[in-house]
Image (cartoon, rainbow, N blue to C red):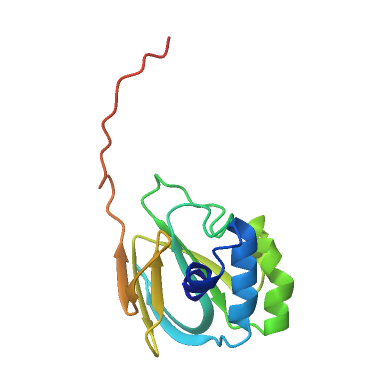
Length: 157
């Protein structure tokens, strides 16, 4: 969310991937891991984290494949938790997120849950579909079949 804020404020002249990479590198100069508490369906996790992404789809932010195994129809959030890493390690591993191979990094934890509550030691911005909607603490609950779409019938012929 902090990177997205920076993209929206000052990197609009760059597009897509370039804007997010530039903003991520600039943010990294001063960003520090934050103590967070995640409450999931059946688990509570307390850790220092650089990033906590709660995804329903595979991609975000200029083509990053943040949750490569996410499925829109499985009724679960895919949570990507990046625990504290050094800045040089972050820079070295960051390009892997564009292929989805970051999930094998030892500091990345991939989790699944219908319910997620995120609490932090100080308020952090919360990004939903590209827009800042508030700060932590925040709760997310998956509602199965919560959206019904009606469209024109198209014959298979």
